[in-house]
Every structure is written in structure tokens, then in C-alpha cells.
Length: 115
Image (cartoon, rainbow, N blue to C red; front, side, top):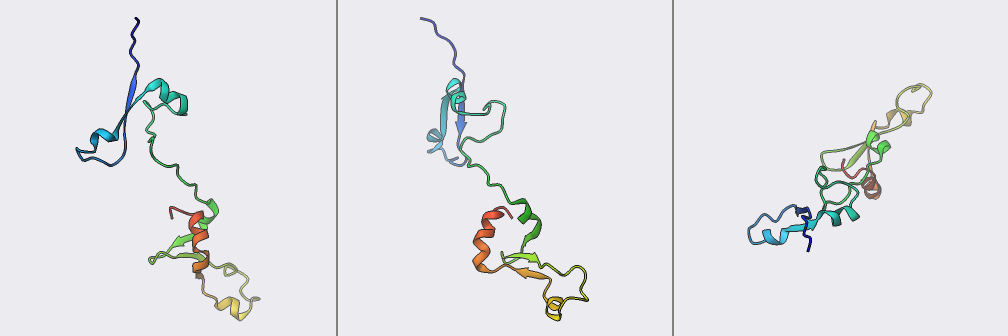
């Protein structure tokens, strides 16, 4: 009978540092089996097996939105940069920054989840 060494990877989950849960938090996975369903090298990369993928932020929304201290979104209003002489009195006196209404908050939160 030929026996050979199969390299194994010991993977730990984040959290669960208590001694009673420690044995259930360590997984022993044979390396050839890992390579069948992974697209990265677990020995050289710092990829976490159990983390969810990150959501991409909308690059246009990142440049135009900011979060206020109370957690609402604020943006600059259009039409206040130049040619103010020919604009109406209402347009000239509009506030420069605008607070986004609560109805649009959820859709903006999906555009910029990490803002």
C-alpha cells in the first residue's frame, strides 16, 4: 500500500474565540479538494472563506452625495454656479444644499452602501 502526504488547510472562522466553541470553529480541508471549488490559492492569498462579497458603490453617487451628522443624505442643488442674472428670483434664493427626502433614502442607500 502506497501512502502519501496530502497537504491540508486548517481554516478558522472569525469570532468564536471561546474555548468551548474552538473545536467546532476549526475546519480541516484537504488542499486538492479546496482547489476544485476555489478560484484563489488559499496558502498565498489573504481571502476569507466565510466572508460575503462586497457591494460595489455607484461611482457617480459617491461624488455627489455626502452624509450629514444625523445620517441623512445631502447633495448640492443644480443651477447655482453661473448665469445667475437671468435666472428667476426663486432659483437664485434656493438653498445650495438639499437634504434627500425619506422616500428616496432606501434607493440611495443601495447605491452607496458604505458612505
